[in-house]
Image 1 (tube, rainbow over the protein chains, first blue to last red):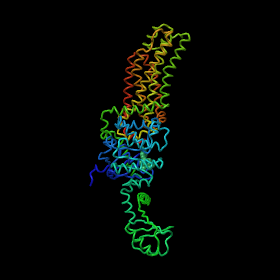
Image 2: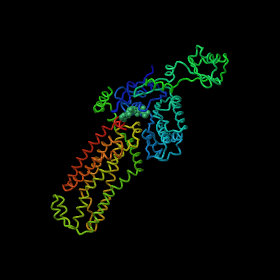
Image 3: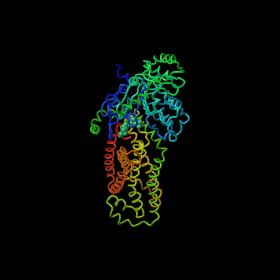
Image 4: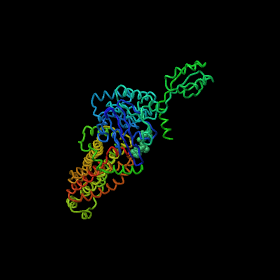
Amino acid sequence: MPSSVEFALRCSGVTRFFPSGVAVDDLSFDVPRGSVLALLGNNGAGKTTTIRLLNGVLRPDSGSCRVLGLDPAIHGTDVRRRTGVVTENAGLDDRLTALENLESTARLRGLRGKTARARIDDLLERFDMSRQAGQLCQGFSTGQRRRVALARALLHDPEVLFLDEPTSGLDPAGARAVMELIDHSARERGRTIVLCTHFLGEAGTSADLMAVMHHGRLAAFGRPEELAAARWPFLDVYLDLGGPPTPEVEATLRGLVTVRAVRPVADGALVSVPGRDAIPSVVADVVASGGRVYGTRSLPKGLEDVYFAVQQEIAA
Amino acid sequence: MTLLASATSLERRADGAADAVDRPAASRRLNHDVVRALLSKDMAAARRSRSIVLPLLVVPFVLLVGLPVGIAIYARAGTPPDLGRFLEQLPGPIARDLSALPAQQRLLELVLGYLVAPLFLIVPMMISSALAADSFAGEKERRTLESLLHLPVEERDLFVSKVLFAFLPTVAVSWIGFALYSVAANVVAWPVMGRVFVPTWRWVGLIVFLAPAVAMLGLGVMVRVSARARTTQEANQLGGAVIMPLILASVGQTSGLLMMEPYWIFVASIVVWAIALLLVRGGLRRFTRDRVASRL
Ligand SMILES: Nc1ncnc2c1ncn2[C@@H]1O[C@H](COP(=O)(O)OP(=O)(O)OP(=O)(O)O)[C@@H](O)[C@H]1O
Ligand SMILES: [Mg+2]
């Protein structure tokens, strides 16, 4: 069992009410250091509130959190020194330039002089905002604001990064830069990242862990592949047969013990098998029954499938 | 069930004692670096904001320079009205002072030395409340508050920087405005007065002690109002309901004050300071991240 410090984030029974009702309800989860957690859920599910609770901006009504071993409700400032946040709304002061926004945050984080300047230049460069550094944020597009907000959250190289919909409003290049940044920070630098997003594809490629929230409750939590394996014991494999399967091929497929389900499609068939190891023998049997296999593709279930399955489970 | 739980949680949060226990930060000393950084950021932004700079310059100019000069020019042009009977109705000290003057100087001394004085208190009250509304409610409206709450900045440092943001420019403008007024009043009145007649000791008490107190009072009201408002405009509307009567009251009271012995101005200043500081202190106690973030 890892100690609490190996877990960057721990929540146990965290509950928070607002006059309008419960926003986070008995939330418990642990996130090891260096992982990327995709925090998912419909609008109003409680994602932003969870980030605020973890960063000590809100206090739980019951339960408690630990961030890097500290309770944010008590040692909030110490926690916030080591975390960085990109809020849903970029939250830049429109009356200041991009550079001034970054400089004032650097100062508030105790970064000064050449170190601060070098770091700011580096981040502006990374998010492709160097040319606009001296412009007032007032005229910036949503994506440009988000770039500056990202740079601002990274000024002090935080150990934990909370990103609340960081790619909304970004163009494809910007979104890719953010996803690369997430990967790099987590894989190579051991940073822990909480990523709230409605883009499941992008969550799927980067997340080690996923949490699905619904009405403040945790509807699912775990590794996407494990959550998927629990729901779908079989692997879907697409067989490219160059056309719909002939009756003989289809009969052969249905007759195989390793194949649990067969679905003919326009130029081949989708089969469910226990795992990758079953694919060569399935291909061999198709060929033996006179079929031609132009290619195969495994379609493992991932975060996106789990998300929708969980939503269906909630609805049921 | 949910409702019940939420009701108890609200009760619990309303309980100040519980709040104080888990707020070790409240006892720590002010972080001057942080306060300075916040203040300079807000000042830099405010300097570029026309909705802040214009009122800051125009209101004092009209009240402190335009109005007195107009009155003086008018008073100089006309034949001096007979103030004898009016003076009889005034209370002791002021009547005594004025009666000692030559007749043609009485009107100027009365108007520029006494009657416009209450106007000076409108300036600090209006400016400080406008700046406080911009700083406390405007920050919510501009949506910059949440990212500040996510920084390692103590609530108290943030609060103090906001109070100073409203207070310091107000006092500066009031004092500079008064200096300009003194110059303008003496210049226009010179042909009649032939001497420097403002500031009087009453003025000094008014400007040095009472004006900052009144500034803090307007600020204190706005701090409390802004906690409930989501926009500057809303804060100004809610605040106006309190500030306008306060302005009227202070104008009325000051006219009264000026009729009394000068030391009453100091007494009044102490009372106003006390009320203002109570308001501000209550505002600080309520200025917790949790409360502020719940009303974003
Ligand atoms: N300050 C607040 N006052 C009252 N209710 C709030 C407050 N903040 C959040 N809530 C409520 O709590 C619930 C969770 O809100 P939250 O912002 O955490 O959702 P979210 O998952 O971030 O949604 P989105 O995807 O739209 O950003 C919502 O029902 C919201 O109305
Ligand atoms: Mg949200």
